[in-house]
Image (cartoon, rainbow, N blue to C red; front, side):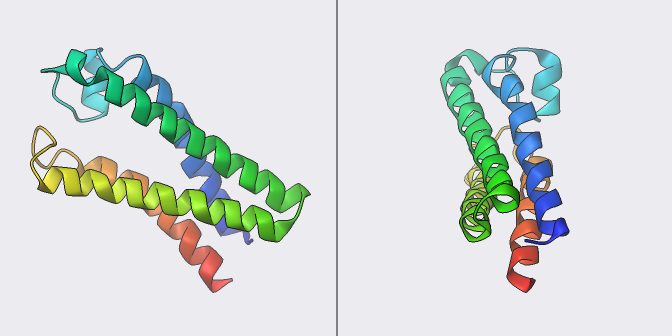
Length: 133
């Protein structure tokens, strides 16, 4: 796995792990709501889901870091497989944010654009870099 793929996968993983506390524990804070581009109305009703999404994101981030460790210190083909699977998960889950927005589930409508792009670019770069190497 080349350096571009490893770097983009690693940054993606670290971002997901770093955002986890905001989604899981601090979703009720106005600054976090602005950061995540979400409306404060009804936060108490969605905290369960935001906690679960944050935990899933943290787990996929940890899985990606484990895959990168395996690439560098174990069986490279197994590590690449782990990284590919986690990056596909990241990419597809980010695209589902866009679908939710298109369906009108994201308030304010259009609010997912920044998050969708931010969470899709690095996994896409990783998968492309792996495919062309």
